[in-house]
Image 1 (cartoon, helix red, strand yellow):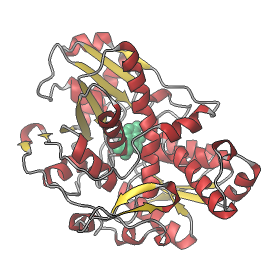
Image 2 (tube, protein in one colour):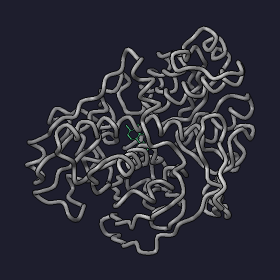
Image 3 (cartoon, protein in one colour):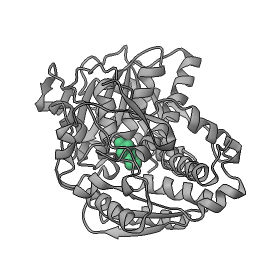
Image 4 (cartoon, protein in one colour):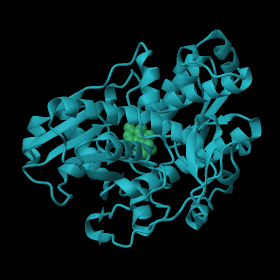
Length: 419
Ligand SMILES: Cc1ncc(COP(=O)(O)O)c(C=O)c1O
């Protein structure tokens, strides 16, 4: 149609396609509440389906080579790191995370180089998630303040007394597998807002303790991650709280778009490092839960990196929702058992993440719990301590599942959380 509308005050452009994707409706059928979240304040998403007819299947290895789908539609989130970087520049605890050169592991695997981006060291929160939820809280607080005060706020007024007073009345709620909840709790704490984090019974108690230590309230629900998402939506609707999920679905995209915008700092830091060294990776491995990290990194690469790598999305065998969606050409649920990759154990992909990865990713691969545990042990023994979730990207590389990787390949993996 070519018609666009600015969605709320976050200035994210959303295409109004002619046909609402029926698959999105299917994906949310398990959770009708997701269709009507947050008092209608977010623009409804109409999403044009692009089918990927040229895909090749490789069932035996759970590896799927994807034909990237060209699109002239704008992305549904901002893949540029300018806004989150502006806030980070005034954050006293922020420094870019280390990019480690793992030369011994590289020669064991048989590749020319292996760079590990150590998100385990991110801002004292222990994962890249620190970049997303906290940034989204800051933007939502700013937006609320601008609407209430009736004028535009310069960036250095974000923590002014007037803004903090308004933020004090805000309550943010989200479901989390752990790290996103930590980030939202930290962001709310900075502004004196309230944070309520819903954790399923599968999330380790250590996360609940760390979240309450930051000052947020934890609500426990029986069941899996998807049950905690449904519960957070219900609480948000009942209480009029701000839902700040990291996943997105039909009718709910603006807050998760902010979360993903925050993550782009990670890809920008990598770009600056490679610009300096001139040694660009040929292959990038990105582990995925709902897909926010993988999509934001991949989009930043496609839009801003001068040298383009092969992008590989890695998921648990127990929850390959992005691979299933890419195979089907539409959002597709991937039910399965509970995975030891707890932070990646999401059975439903994020709508805007899939929309973007559909354009940007080259390969989708899934790894087993045992292989991920072995990979985490191997990384930890080499001095890069992490968990099966945090080492899943490396796991896919180490397994040798990807065609075209050889002794000339330069690989980048994200160590996405601390052990
Ligand atoms: C350590 C870690 N790695 C990767 C991911 C996957 O991120 P996403 O859910 O955005 O795909 C998460 C999500 O919580 C995580 O905590």
